[in-house]
Length: 186
Image 1 (cartoon, one colour):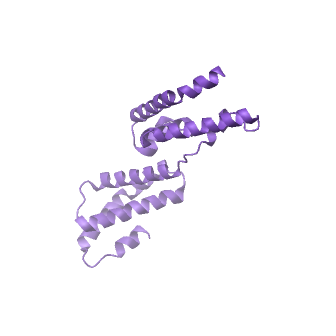
Image 2 (tube, rainbow, N blue to C red):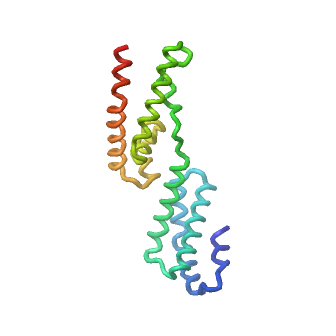
Image 3 (cartoon, one colour):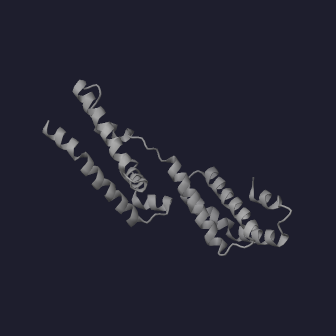
C-alpha cells in the first residue's frame, strides 16, 4: 500500500489535523529518506519497500500518539533499523568459503576425515561466539566486506566492529589451537 493510500485510509478517530501534520512530514522528509535508503540498499524495489514500511509505521505511530517529537530523527532511525534487519536476513551463515582451505575430500580417507573434523570444530567454535562477534567476523572475514561497509549497513561504529571481530578471532584461535597444533605436527 502506498503512503498516500495509508493516509487516505484514515480511521474514524484520526483527526484531519493529525493527517495534515503527517502529510507535511512525508512531504518534507520523503526525498531525503528515499535517498538515504537508496544509498544503503542497492535494489531499488527493495529500497522503495523499506521506505513504504517506514512511512506506514510513522503514520500508525503518529495517529496513536498524535505527535512524534523530532519526526525526522524518528524516521531515519526506523529506516536504519529496517536496513539492518535486511542486512542480517541476507547474511548466510554457511561455511562454503572455507572449502578451498580445507583438505579435498577426494584426497583419500585421511584427508576426508581431517576435513570432517575441521568443519565440525569450526562450526562448533563459531556457535560459541556471541551473535555480534559472529556477525562481525563472518561479514569481514568470510564475506569480505570492509568495516566501513558493515558500519554503514548496520549502524554499528567501525571501532565496535573491529573490537567484536578481534574478540571473535581471539576466541577462535584459543578454541582451535589444539587442531592447529595437531595438524601442524602430523
